[in-house]
Length: 134
Image 1: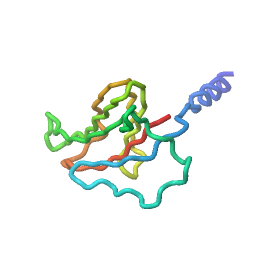
Image 2: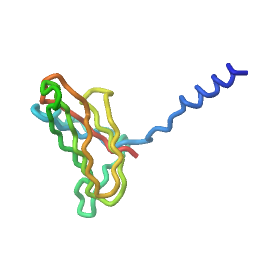
Image 3: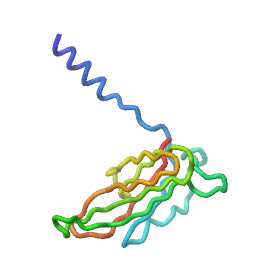
Image 4: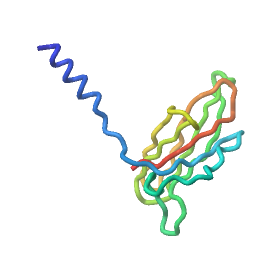
């Protein structure tokens, strides 16, 4: 009986509701040049459109920065500031380029949040990509 309960409990935990679609990735970085745009556009319908304001500008912007830690200045926090300039709530996934090492930032309307993407031993340069999640 206890074994059956354990199996049912672990199966229920494994079912995680994810996001259905995302926008095309946008790239950026600090101290290095961002990844160049792909010259071959994806097929129509592959990505959801990015959120836009009434004047057609992007709702989401991401700005990178670095900061040495106080205890050990050789350890660098790699930070992203995610800004939502629209009135709707938007979830944004920020990752290191070509990596599955990501964070998800949930923004309310007109909100700006600063999050640590990761840490590095002395490197002040990093590249990131972000997507809007639907």
